[in-house]
Length: 497
Image (tube, rainbow, N blue to C red):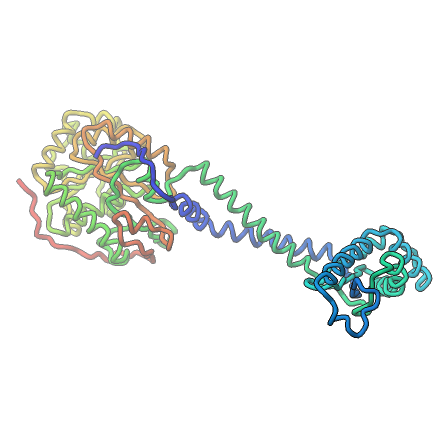
């Protein structure tokens, strides 16, 4: 399959960008939580520090356009009367809120009754006026930090309203519907408001930081990122396993260990089936496995693919072609000292037969390197390397070659020229998309095509729909301590001569 950037235009509404943003945010939920808690507590603290007690008192007026309501007021109160009364009530509200004459009369009355001097601004700062819905009632609320002053102002309003109303609205009837109430402590909504504001600000800031960081890093977040950018088949999705040993190091994840869980094992059986189909349909038997950078799990995938094929009774040779940082022995937990594998054969120090080791516990043949060697690129590019791969192809059913990262050195592109096809391993949230593009462009210059991609260390959750849509249908999270008890497969395979 040739690699090319997609330029197709999606039809209809594309929800993938939205789901991608949600996945990005959920992956950093702990950061969102920290910001929410920090800003909510800060808002709560500010509210408490700035809080001061205040008291309120109310008085309600009824407004009518008729000078005297009389006994038959309701009977003869027409729609025009109600409209006129509502207009007067609205004007009365405006005068109370803004009239200097009204405020002066209230201030003079307070001065007489309590001896306290208030200005026009003082009065206006204490008053709030509202029209009661679907009525001609006007509610006046007085609020201040002085309990007695609050009541004094309210009673002053009640005492001056009648004379003021006659002067301002001589043809209207304004009466007290509910007398001035005693001052009571006002409810404090600032704590809730400040806390809620802190909650929203913290959440928004955390989301903004996460999205900016994701934008800058531009890391791979789902199989959809692979499919939207590059026309590459997803062979399987391997879910992340958080296994740690007692030293805190990441443990070996091998399908021969039952503790890794059935889904992990079945995923590599699925990959094995796809390799067998590739051999059946296209005659492929030599597979090189690479990634765009280190620590994406390519060696673990190489080892488990080889083990899965070996368990099915096939003769399998696993070659460690990463001569800079050989890791096959470490991944399999095997100690083979003094072996330089490909390097020894190319330099004539050993024959192919002498270098290939059979590991009985795994029913697997290995051509490994125990330490880094000099001139790895030159070694891999030699004519002898091509002969090594050809001999391996003749003698084994399958040859799995673990290569260095393609996006780091040229070794993977060199080895790919000797193989039938390439399997590309990439890990979620490990590598930036431009790095993948660079690595793919490097290996696509070789003779071999890319068979597909193994999407490794995938997270799980309801929004990880890509895992179910891309071929790796085992997406549960499994973990725990991985011991040394191995589950061995069949030993009936034979090395071809």
